[in-house]
Image 1 (cartoon, rainbow, N blue to C red):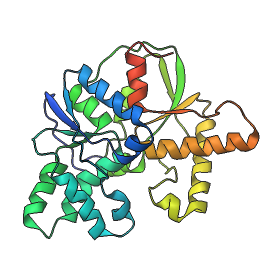
Image 2 (image 1 turned 60 degrees about the vertical axis):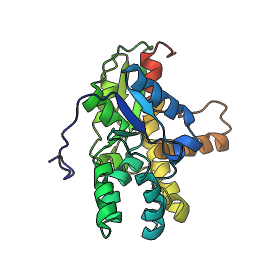
Image 3 (image 1 turned 120 degrees about the vertical axis):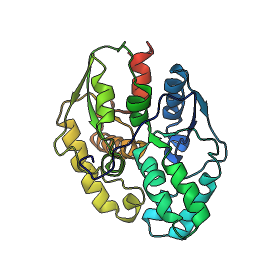
Length: 267
């Protein structure tokens, strides 16, 4: 068992084919992270399949207390990933929904429950997949830099993969990762939480921005776009209010950071 009570997984050998579940936020706000995820996997000799019918994982409805609506959204995903290939998700939040909650959503339907369990067992968060299945090992081709890492609550507590993003960054010999104070604390996003409780969310993310800036890091890296958008968005608002012309806390998804650093395109 890992520290968060999750059963340790048995990882398969590197496959020839995988599915990509890109997530809503990657699709709508940070498509480069999705493209760089594909580049990272294809460089390893893996064919990446992207079912065009994929939509949301169902987490917003589920976490807001609408299980029927969440089930309806999740059902559409159950019927997309039909081959027995791993499903790679560049988000611990969406990965956690599919892996931990899909079986519970369909617990009352024996046939769908079997399908949900089978799919959940094939879901891998991106950094987890790169470390434990791909055995990612590429030389750092970028200039020396200092960054802070933020790991989402779901990746840390639900998926139990809080160490794999750090392991990938530690493998880059020109990258120094500095640790923020209270690193395990939430960024305040929480999906619909930020919409339902904006004042609380703002207070939480303001503390998170201060903690990250306090490290002296030049930028932020995260494997979850929700956290990344929330933290850098709050920092950008602070910059706007202060009249700053240069972002005080730029951020990048882990997939894009890894690709830049190991493909020869890093500044």
